[in-house]
Length: 175
Length: 162
Picture (cartoon, rainbow over the protein chains, first blue to last red):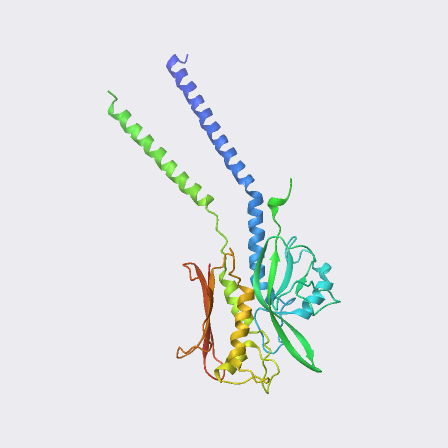
């Protein structure tokens, strides 16, 4: 027969094990709650990081870059004619640069607020690729170049612009 | 009186609690520290210089009707005159002032406090007078871009204060 002292010891150990298990379960639940509460924030941060990386490199990607159309190979140079053609075929680039990522090119100098369409190009200032509103964004300076005609002579015209990349804000999404 | 063995156990227990608490605090501090978005990013300043140098000005010479800003700097260094009789340095200075004013607005309660642009030759001589606006603050982002055209070498220094 187990004596009373040993029974007490077993009881003590059981209580101790229960307490320790309960403690770890509570801590685990706390950690999980904290982690999942910041999930949307983390998703937005990732989208933001993607937008920042995109904005630094997109001007030199084949869909946008001037290449050698304007003399030497130029960095941060966007071919405006190419972008207008891209805008007309933008449906084929669905989610190509990320989910709900919108790209806008805005002339800084000379300044203006005329939205570009095939009808008014090149006498306009803003090329919005997806024709959606830009909410939160990252931006970078670029040179927006095109071929222009003056007195029957073709020349390269480059203007200063900003490329804006907007990203999805997951914190705005309702559950 | 508490026996010595019990005292030692208590000290050990307290030490473990303190150690766990310190590790926990460090972990909490690190996880709560979010990287702050900079007002001005370095890549913006670098891209700005690269982009404005490609800008097509309204000053031309006998080779090109409209010089890119980078070539206008060389024309200014060589003391050339535009086709419409304006001095290339005057056109350079006014165009750059307008470009920077459009790109980095410092009026009102904007986060940008000021800027400075200088174009200097290898020997330290200014190509055009310093273009600046606003205040010089402790926080800044700047870059220097050297150029080695056929004529004299020069560099473009641009700093934004925020």
